Image (cartoon, rainbow, N blue to C red):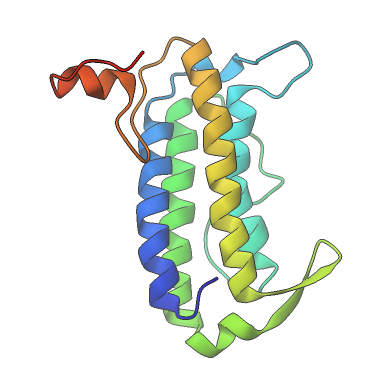
Length: 166
């Protein structure tokens, strides 16, 4: 859980950077990839990450420019990545301008439960990580290259001159 705005923003900087790198690898063609008929597409999951930033944080009173939860999913991978860049950057700016550390302890109704703002921030980060994991599976199915999140990807092992783990 976060105790200061700067503590969250340091974590958000790292996590949003990883998400941005992953979204930058998407192609327009890859957006329709799904694990099975009837399951969510790669594009849907990527867009869900984008719109969740504003959806969750508007519930705790932050006001900033970002795609809203009901915004239509773009057909372009580039627009999805740009939407995320705007959402994540404007979130950080809004927190610095609108909140103090005391706001982290304020309670809000989040999906029928009372959460502190700090818990909401924690869930926002974990939610993003969860969906990044789903994206990586679908991206592999779509034949896309991968970047490492918490360690090197297979492609990065090769670039570093190491033996790719079996």
